[in-house]
Amino acid sequence: MSLEKRKGRPVYLDNHATTPLDERVVEAMMPFFGEKFGNPHSGSHFYGWEAAEAVEVARGQIADAIGADASEIYFTSGATEANNLAIKGVARFYREKKNHIITCVSEHMCVLDTCFQMEKEGNRVTYLKVAQNGLFDLDELQKAICEDTILISIMTVQNEIGLIQPMAEIGAMAAEHKVLLHSDAAQALGKIPLDVKAMNINLMSITGHKVYGPMGLGALYVSNKPRVRLEPVFNGGGQEKNLRSGTLPPPLCVGFGKTCELAVTEMPTEAKSLEKMRDDLLERLTTKLDGIHINGSMENRVSGNLNISIEDVDAESLMAALPDLAMSSGSACTSASEESSYVLKAIGLSNEMAEASLRIGLGRFNTEDEVDYAAERLIDEITNVREGRKSLSGNAAE
Image (cartoon, rainbow, N blue to C red; front, side):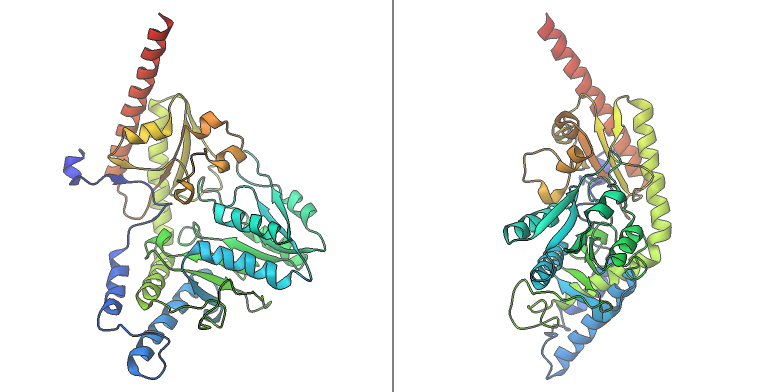
């Protein structure tokens, strides 16, 4: 399949950065960009009531997707804001009672940066190290918990290497010690089953655009039982029960709700399809090329994720040579940094191997033909790069 036959659009393989909007989600949203334009906080007339009802239906759909009650869902602008609200909200509200936070060195940067800020404000933070497979030692978590611990923050699925953390075990440990548990589940929603009650998770951050929904909207689950208290991050009109002020956007809320509804129904078959395509791609690469190293565990991994390091290849140069493939070399959220991935270095990779890494994210709309095309292009270009390097080395030796 040539690039021309694909109408000039590159094959999209970066579904961990964001996902295309599902047409069914667009269809659900469209009326709220037109005739159903009301402000959901206008409680004195039909247009406001109509918008408010749609928002509450969406809130229920989102709650159903994670095993929560609708009253426990608070809309935010995305997972970054939700993470900030969860960590800062807990740390500031409970600081006079307890001030110790536990997290992990491979968390998303918005969690780590928030924890750095909490340290400046007087909190004590423990950063758990991870093994080569990306998992941290649960015994180390047990040792880190003390009488002063108020919060554990661990992401359900790691955003670069797709690692699935054992949240039910972590949740049981947190509950045993009466410590609050927060999880960034932005990369988990729609990919693995989520049940906040069964997992003993007290706060969970999610977002729409990682699961074929709209950018610009996320949510924070806040447990009612046990009741979790938060200090708002910013103030205003008192929306979302005074926890998150600001006018809610009904089109985005409706889209996020529809996204969650679809995620629940399509997850089982979608996961199998993505796993097959991912494994086929990996087999093609490792059969034709040597020096391909898998980063993280393949056993505890979401089905659409593949993160590899390629010997004798610089990932940024490789991607520049493959404009017909849309991939990444790490998290899109830290792409402005010139540093190699701190996540890959945390699992033991050298700078050289971290800079030789590709993150391939398969999604709902990828096809087997696209995966075949991507495999061919990767094999050809990696071979070309390596031969070019050998030629340069030979000339230099002469």
